[in-house]
Length: 233
Image (cartoon, rainbow, N blue to C red; front, side):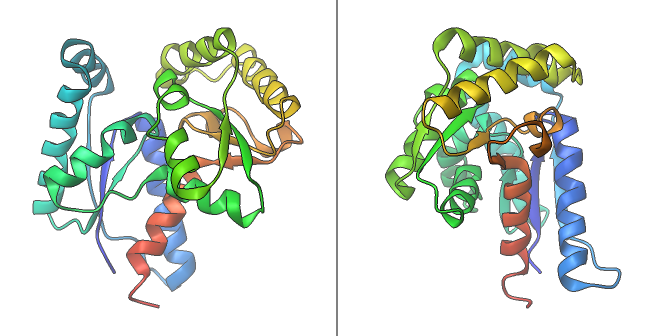
C-alpha cells in the first residue's frame, strides 16, 4: 500500500471528508480492519489566505511545496491537494517536491467520460472557474468542454464559497444560489455539473437537482485509494 500525503486545511471541513472517504474506501476494498496509510499536514486557512493576499500564487506555491517536502520526508508516495483551487500550483509543486500530485481535474474527467458526457458545467471559486488549470486541462487532455456561469452569478458563487462555506455556514440562500447556477448551466447545454469546490458537495446533494452532479472531492478521494492500492490487489 502506498502512503498518501495529504495537504489539508483548505478547509478542515473538506479535509475531514477526505480522511473519512479514503479510509472507508480502503476498508471496503481490503476488508477487515484495514485503513489507509496517510501522512497529513493541515494549514491554518485564514493564514493561507493572508499569505495569498501578500505574496500571490508564487507565495502559495512555495508554501505548498514546503509542505509537500515534509510529507515526502515523512514517507508519502504521492500528494493529494484537498482543494480544486490549490491545483493552480499543482505543476510547480510536483516539480519542486519530486512526487506526483494526483490531479483532481483528471479524477473528475474520468468520471465524466465514464458517463459518456462531453460537456459539463463547473461551479467553484473564481480561480477554478476562470483559469486554465482546470477548464483547460479537461479540454486539452480529456476532450471535455466546460461551461461556467455568467459573470455576476459566478462572482456570487465565489463570494459564497469564501464568505460562507469556508466558515462552515451551509444555509438555504446559498443552496438556492448554487441550484440556480446549476439550472442555468444545464439550460445552456451542460450535460452534468462538476462541484469544483470541495465544500460544495457539503451544500448540494444529488437529490437536490435532476442534473448529474460530479462530486470532485469524492472522485479525488476514490482516485487516491485506487492509486494507493494499485500494487496490492
